[in-house]
Length: 217
Image 1 (spheres, rainbow, N blue to C red):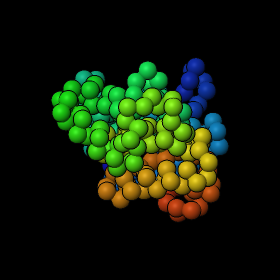
Image 2: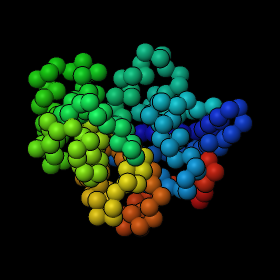
Image 3: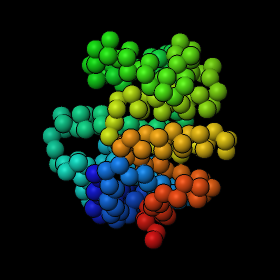
Image 4: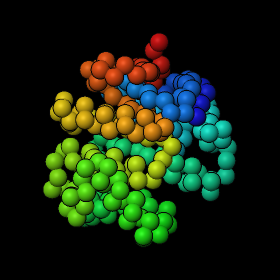
């Protein structure tokens, strides 16, 4: 599903965040992307998502070269990818419902369908009772569920999560990974960047280790 060939990313003309990355991620796979802070995990996820462009190399998703297609075709591709951020990036001036609905509204989905999908995903994640609350009034674990709901409501083929348990205690961390595991069991490709070795050991999924922008095998 995702093929990256000799991908590098330089900032300021010299600093290499990624250095000659080649990896194949199969459809329906669950991958942990690990490594110390500054290793390039976030940059790699952003390149897959399309919010960053590689300095060199190619990335192919579902058989399409992400950086050789017309720019107008990139937004529809990105809609097939959900992104969960470490700091949630929830909008304080909108309710939980509005935060989750935002992606569908941008896509032009009709309001009846928006309501159906938002309420379904909030129910699935057991936070439907918080729909009309401000996300800032929720616990850290609930905010993470809202962030996951926002990513899943698009019904994406790929979920990317950048340190999704970094702000959670050990119990909530396991609950969060269990949610991603459930989504993966339904066929969604899941890529999680984390430096939490206990989670990696617990789930025994394929792991790709980054150090200084390069994969270490």
